Image (cartoon, rainbow, N blue to C red):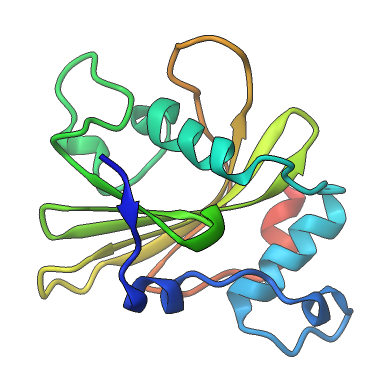
Length: 169
């Protein structure tokens, strides 16, 4: 079941503003990293943002990259299980928050780079814990029903977003 996002989540995941595409980025470290990735990877707009968000919820392979939910998956389970998360879609399909069991994972599609959907992930404890991490992910958009393996382009913990040098690897 997909519902509209509560107002407090809309403030948590915001789009990258146009001014963040300058060489002296005055935005937050996350906005600057997203803008640099968009520039370096020649990111193109997503023509169907609701379809992109639906693909992430239905087919993203949680076992293919480090995240807080991976250890809770049962053997052979890869896609987002409905009993683990309640997907909450942000207005205008700007992203999705997967809420459940004291954790929240925010997924914000930034655009298309080659055949991949470029996605910012924000993964954090919501149960009084202190874990807060994230990643810039590439998710291949291929037809079919199989789970989509994820490539980690950059990742971080404790909200220590790296500079764009992580894109050089």
